[in-house]
Image 1 (cartoon, rainbow, N blue to C red):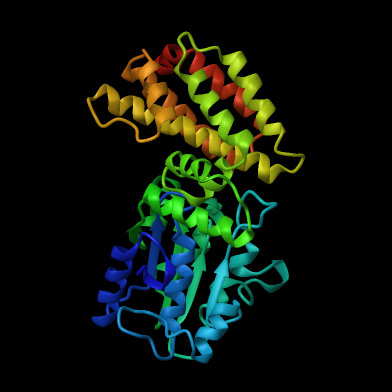
Image 2: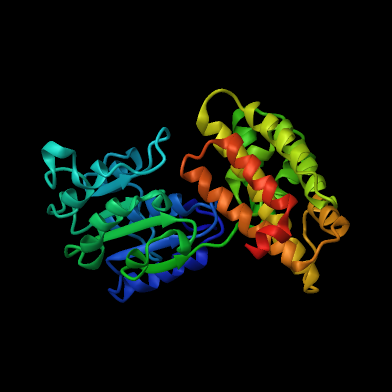
Length: 352
């Protein structure tokens, strides 16, 4: 059975259980791994276990003590969670040190210094750590380096390269891998069943196979428009010569179809750029004699591609840069135009 209902990360849970049994839980952790694999859920479950008044073997929260009930309700005084607001590109500095009138009298960095209200521990979770401004990250440095006794800080991000070196050096890095396609398929099928959604099993299986081990991406791919365009995107990327204007026009149209609000547009574009990242990585693996892609649409696109490793590298770098630009709140149509222009002239980009 999965550790506390968190699928796919039993090995990580065992490491924490071993550390707790030896009294070696660290003060600062950085969780790294693909989006949509359960890092945030794991952090919350770990926090509940660490403040549980009667934890079970394996660092499993009892689920029935007053501390567990408060943790489940999201009202535990010793568990602090900070996340990026949906309408903001970064986590506000005020979330860490309070607003201008209450500097260091409010915010996470102040609350973590307070004495635990229930047991002997306080846990602070920073979701969306990829979206820390330099100023906010610098405010965290002293707390990460010297957490108060009994305090545990957990930052949740996607890649080490997206964290400041000073943040990385002060945390123990814990890596989370993608979920198995079968796990994604089963979890998505269970979600749909709970909602009474009768989406065809073949559609769910296809979304899981193309998800890269991410539940978030699988959910997006269940949208018929998104699922269909992913295949079209892979086809366009595999063509030589690549027609950048055509690709940009179709991609901008499908992104705009997500609605007028910026968050769903950004999420949709990120899903397509993630598919492009998979395409270029699969092309590089194929060129080096590696394994074929498990997703049939991706495998067909890579097989049809005739460019070399340099072009794949340029495409991969440009796509990763574009994903970063989404997080920085870039103007999406301009971003798509710039990205496709690089893909259309990779030799020029490679020599610059």
